[in-house]
Amino acid sequence: MDRQYLRLGFVDVYDSDTLLPISWSENIPMRLMALETISCEREWRRIGHPLYAFMFNDYTPDIEIFNSVSGVWARPRNRIANVPDEAQIDQMLGIPLV
Image (cartoon, rainbow, N blue to C red; front, side):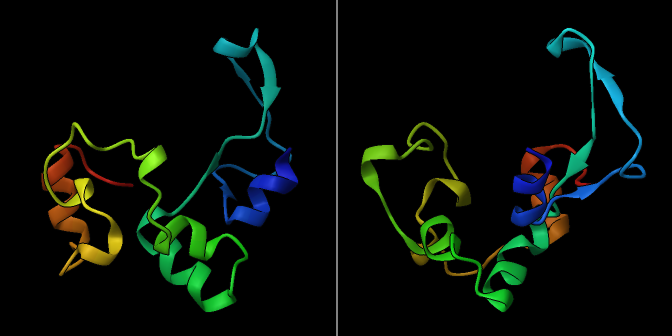
C-alpha cells in the first residue's frame, strides 16, 4: 500500500521506518504520509503523471461532489480564472495549510 501512496507523490512525515499505531485501525502500526496539495498539480503536470488529466482536467458531472459548496472549489478547474495562492486558501478554509 505504501508504494501506491509514494507513486501519487506522498512523502513520509517521519522517517520511513517509523510506524505509528493508528487508533481507528485497531492500533495497527502504519507509516504517516502526507501529500503537498498546493504543488501536487504542478508536479504531476511536470512529470506527466498518468492520472493528471483525470484528476485536474476531466469534468465528470456524474461524480461531482462539490455541488453543495460555494466558492472557487465548486467550479470545475477549467472554469476557474485564477487559482488562489496559499494565503487565500488558508483564509477560505479557515485553517492553515501545512
